[in-house]
Structure formats: structure tokens, C-alpha cells
Image 1 (cartoon, helix red, strand yellow):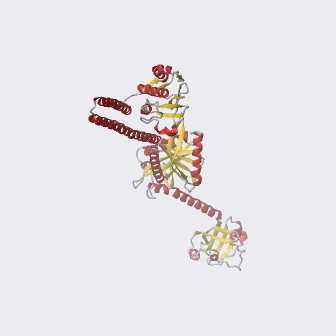
Image 2 (cartoon, one colour; image 1 turned 60 degrees about the vertical axis):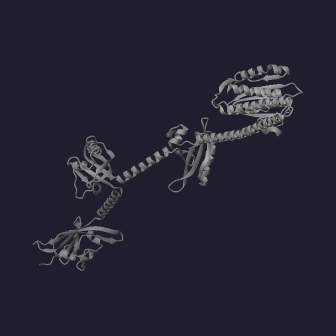
Image 3 (spheres, one colour; image 1 turned 60 degrees about the horizontal axis):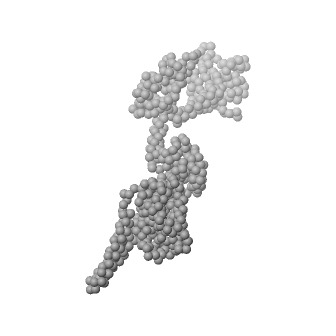
Length: 608
């Protein structure tokens, strides 16, 4: 074979659009374009330079073998210089002479750095996309309207639990949705997207290839070209775990809400400004408002200012010092109604452990307080009745024993006495003793009747009319001593009272004033009455002898207790009056000074 005559590179290679080089069969560079030499940083070639191409492609270890095969091939490679890394693609092809003998190799090299960078960027974006798809559990799908081809990505297939090789049809895709609502809904939305260019976004349930029911959120968006839908692109996201978690949260919230609403307590949650952020039915019922009317409200907008200020100070104390208030008795006034509560307030913390408000619970104990008061009253009444019973038993025992001893002594005298005249005198004494005993038994029986006849009902009586009627019966006695009575009771005042008891009370108090009038001045009796929300107060005052209260205060209303040396004093009238008044639920008090007069105050209980 004849030697190849070197051709001037600038004559042949300079005109080529691509970087090109010529190699001999031994892989030695014969000639190259300037652009090719620039790529590799080589000087122009002559007979003295023998550059082996394998040194330029050091990263291709089998280059020599592949060149000897005299076949066309291409490869990618890169070179590094001060400007960075350049990515190249070289094409190797055999070089023939005019007799088609292989005399070497032609190399054409392209700079594909920008293409590689774009590929790397695309790979990076695809990697990010795949990562996002995997993390968000969101796949994509595409439907070609013309070819009716449906394409699923790997994540979409994973959601449906089908193999990567699975290629679905639209009918198969629809059949994955749970029969009934989900299947009908997705079919309707898909056809609307194609027919009416309507996008959609909804959550439905699918049944996977493995038979699992799972919640997914699907979207679809038509791609329109020249007014016609040619494709529908959409996504599918696995939201099953999220839906199950939300369902459980809702169940727990519903359970908690039902529990809180069913508690016999007023439950509320306040923020740091004491605004209500949650209330239960008990709190709504107490305030007579709906939930939405209470949220965001403070106590100053719901209660009287005094009560609201107390509550706010408690709130600040709980949230500032993180000290709960447990079982504190509080009083709330709302629309004129007073309610007693047993209140507890505890700090409310957020997820970071910082106080964000308080939780309050109030138990309405108004009925309990009322029962407690009734019980205390019952205990007081029982104690008083017990004391009266002991006193009454003592009186009965003492008085009857005295009468019995008197009878026994007189009978002993009668049996031993022979003188008829003396016997007659003893018999007269026995007769008087019998009368006294009968009187005592009558008094005791009257007291027993007052305390046992609970069936007697009170009636509304005009107080002034009853006073006038009693005074008329006393007119002769009052006129005899020129006594003066001033009746200041108004005509319209009524008292709820047992008629017989009212007459007895007025009669005894007026007669008591007459009986113990002062010998040094004309008797003056003043009668007043005042009506209030608590009932009626009747006052009967006189300017008589008066009573030494320091000495006799605890004995004034005792049975057979007298405080003046009068023969006609029996000490039964005031005892009787007190029993009658208390039997009707009222009370009586006395004010008196010696030689100045006495005032009896009678409080009538207006309750039936």
C-alpha cells in the first residue's frame, strides 16, 4: 500500500462545519481541524508530532481494540480544564482510500456540555418530582381523547396496588372505584370534563387490586386545543390514613362533646383575655344564649360588673400563678336571679406547654343551698320544739306535782279532822284546788292544741279591722281608766293568719298593756304596722310599768312567769301568744325599759 500523502489541514479540514480529526491505522493523529485541536488543547500537527489518540481518550480503556475493529461507533467523554468540565460526543468511522481499503479513522467531535447540563437538570427535576410523588403519595394520569389511551405513572399504579407493567383502560380504571356513589361520581365528573371542559377535585373510595378499600383524592383538568378537549390530565392522591385519622378525631371530638354536654356542669374554656372559646350546653342553658352568641364574649358582657370583676381577678390569678381554684363557692346574679355555684378553674396549656387560657367548671348548687337552709331551719325548729317540749314537760311535771301534793295534804287533813266546821273549810279548799287543777289542765291543753293542730290553714285577714274588733271588746275597760289608743295601721294591710290566733294575739298584748299600766300616768297604747317584701311587722307599744330585760329577758315568754307583784298575774298570756305566732311561722320580740313602757314586735310569715 502506498503511503498517504499528507494534505494541508487548512485546505481540507478548515472548511468542515464540525471538529474533525484524521487518524492512521495505528491510532496516531495525522491531521485535525483547528476546532478539534482547540477542544483538546493541541497545537497544529506536522510530520514531527505523533499524537496518539488513546491518550486523549484515557477514560475509554478499550479504544484501541474498538479502532482495530474498523467499525463505526460513538462515545461520550469529558475533559477538564481551567474553565471547568466539557462534555463531548465523538463519532468514529473508518477512513477508506479510493480502493475502499481502510487507511485510518475519521473522528468528529461535538461539544454537548449544554445538552448534558439540560439532561442533568431534567434528571434532577424528575428525581425531585418522583420524590415529591412518593412522599405526597400523589400520582398522575393522562387520557388521550382521540386514541382513548390511558396512562398511569408508577405512583398511580402503586396506589391501585397493580404491577408496574399494568396498562389500564378507562373501563378498568372506573371499576377500581367502589360501586355505588364513588363509581357513579367519578364517571360523571370524567365525562363532564370531556364534554363541558369542567375541572374537578373530589375525594372518593377505591377498591385496590388486592381488595383493600382506600380513600383517594382525585383531580381532573381538560387540555383544550382549538376549542376541543384533546387530553384530560389529572392526579390521584392516597388520603386513606389521613381520612381514617380525621374520622377518629371526629369520633373522639363527638364523644368528648357529648360527654361534656351531658355533664351536669357548666363547662367553658377561656383565652388569656378571658374570652370564651368553648362552652357546653349547661353554660348555654344557664346564660340563655346559643353557642355562637357566647364565643368571644367576656364575663363583663354577660354578668353584672361586680360579679364579672371578681371572675376576671380569679382568671388572672389562675393563669398568672398557674394555681388552680378547686371547689370554690361563688355567687352569680343574672337578670335579677341569684345562682350559687361550686366553681373550679384550672390552667389550660397549649402543645408547647405554655398557658393559653383556663378551663372552668361550675356546678349549680342553688337547690343544695336551699335544701341546706331548709335543713338548718328544720334543725332550728326541731331544736326549738325540743326545747319547748322539755320546758313543757317540766311545767307539766312541776305544776301537776304541786297540785297533787296539795290534794294529798288536804285529804290527809280531812281524814284526821273531826270538827265538822274545820272539815267543811278543808272541803272548800279541796274544791278550790280542783278548780285550779282544771284551769291548769285547760291551759296546758290549749298549748298542746296550738302545737298539734297543723291542719289549721291561714287566711288573708285585714289587720286594721281585726284590731278594731278586739278594741271594741275592751272599750269599757279602756274608757274606765281614760286609756288612749292610737291605731296607725293602714286600712289596706292584710296578713296571712289563722283568724282565732290573730284575735288572741291582739287581745293578749293589749290586755297585757292594760294590766301593767303605770299608776303615775294615763295609759297610751300605740299600734303600728309595716308591710315589706319579708312580710308584715305589727308593733304594739305602751307607756306602762315596763320590764327589766337584763333580769327577765330569757323568761318573758315562759309559762307562768310573772315580773310584777300583781295578784291577778298568771304568766300564761305571753307564753300562749309566742306559741300561736311560731305555729304560723312567725316570731315575736320585745323592747322594754322599767317605768318607760314596752313594745312587742310581731313578725307575720306571709307564706302559706
